Length: 200
Image (cartoon, rainbow, N blue to C red; front, side):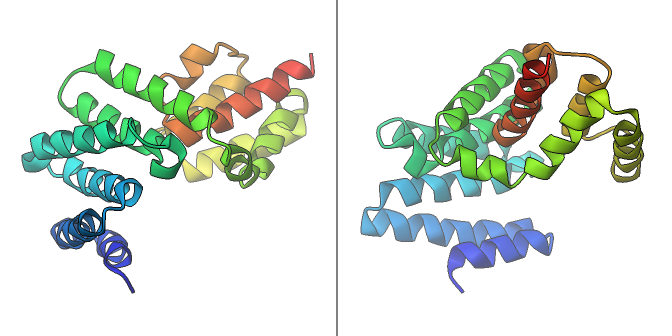
């Protein structure tokens, strides 16, 4: 098991400070061997952990910006730059800068949409996408889907499920539906919208 895996395990155990130490070791290792794409991803992973700790928010921002600066000089796909934009969006939200958060989300969605592996990633969500598209015109499927949505998100807190609810209620404006979504969530909603509109 490598340091990155140990960090992920620490996150699962809700031990962010332990995860922080493992990610710091990962960052140092990739820096030492000169692997810029992996180093920038490790720096963003560290920023993602620190972003959840209020006392470490400023350091999280500095790290995410450092990762982004590197990622803008190398292959965006190799460094998964959209994840760093997502991290910066969350940090901007927490620092009370919604305009900057919105711009980072837009950049994240654009970068992810341009990634060659997006089609494969999206295929993993095909059953959900298909179900929502069918639910738009099929009352029975819609009732089943709404029941499932109520079970998994009874407080209507999940922004993806809320976007799906809006689609079922007739909303088709991409900007309204996707404003607060991260890169993969955006692609799921965009795929649903595309298929719904193509049926008309």
